[in-house]
Image (cartoon, rainbow, N blue to C red; front, side, top):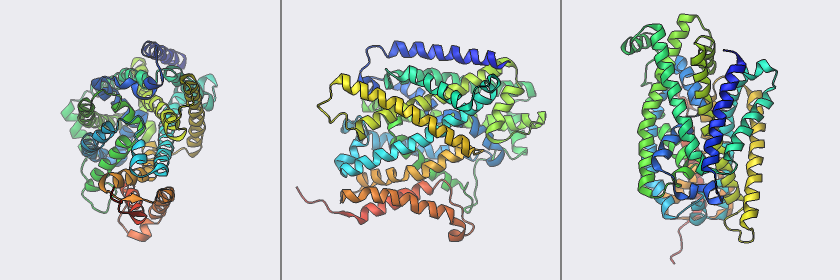
Length: 483
């Protein structure tokens, strides 16, 4: 199918999103933008969060990584399940009890104002890096598949995508995103299922035959039992649990959708439903990855990693399946990018600018400031996507998880210290501890062979980072004085 035809389908899909945004964004205010007026349907939030949790990186990188690490990613997904349980029964009750708009306000009431600002700042850094890495991967595929043939520069393609996202999130915010994420998740999962059935059909094999073929090519191994390996199952499951606790439970983007649900009970149902759906969906992505590698071998396709799925879908499948792939890919992109920009805007306005504390600004002034911040983050996204283009790493899922290990660790330490202890900290020292912990982790990671020999540190770097932060906070803490 020609790039022009593919582009026409992209535009049609965007117009549908725009119609949904217009309908849901009518009569919106700042509360609608930040927390959806606390009136979101928990079933819609749970379903839409699948798309936000997965993103275009999962859509492309997880299947592409099967050739290198088999089904090892499913070990991490089992850890996700444990993490979601902690979120549902530890973090959500805390957020609802305090009636938070920004979850980082908890740090202010528990540890102090500088701790609060530090936590919010690390979220802003973490989400900006993670979201732009995800955005880069999908933009690159769209650039290669469609816009390159029109002579459109990469930065212009990125700008077009960001403008499209801004247009439908500018007014409605979370209130709109809950609905658009539902539509986008539906399209993404439909594309996933269609691609699986197409490959099974064109290869003329059954489900059981495909599993046997994957096992024969060492694609379907799930559990790795070598304690020295970074894929050791206990390390992966533990890392997966903490990744979920931090990247979902301590992340404003993910939690602002949960706390937009009216009651705690419904919000908990949302999280637990999401947990079990994610197990099935990730397993399906891994199964697709195995099929793609078998099919690519049959076709003598040499593409690997992040390039495998786009190459097979756009060059070796019928035009209609290519269209479905592009729509599904965009559907995987938008929930992660639109939610990130909205959450970053909310966090910056509430946590950094103190919009809710400021009684001098009128509602009209607050809205104008919020819109300017929204546009500013779109510009920052453009800048960081260009940085990732310069770096050009072959597997973006590895980059994202590595970045999370450094930037979410201090959040893990801050929240854990606040929840598990009753001690007070010297608030002015907290920013220094939260900066020092990732720096120490960088050197641990860089020189791990000299320090640990054959033992490989992988995703558990996040846990080490959080532990170092926790220890640092203990060192500058004291028992609270009795009231």
